[in-house]
Image 1 (cartoon, rainbow, N blue to C red):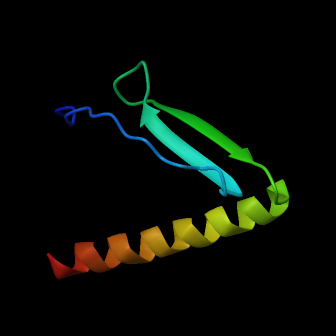
Image 2 (image 1 turned 180 degrees about the horizontal axis):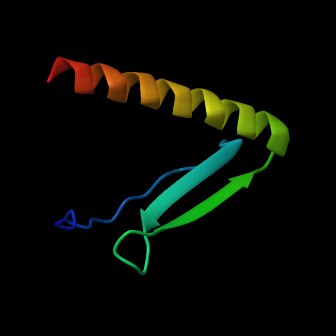
Image 3 (image 1 turned 180 degrees about the vertical axis):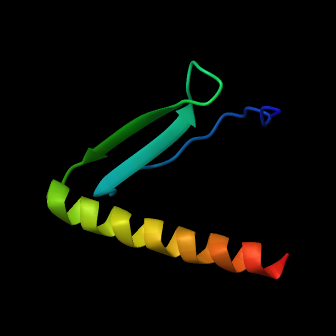
Length: 67
């Protein structure tokens, strides 16, 4: 698998209630995850992340079905 071109990104997260950053890990099949919730409970952030994961899975299944 080829690595994507790396670029500098700046995000203003001053009003973010939570964030998740997923980066390539030190091994070929690993990832590094940084996450935090500030201003909302971790339980609420987990609920939102599960909803996003469900949406991603539905979109991926639709894309796979379109091939």
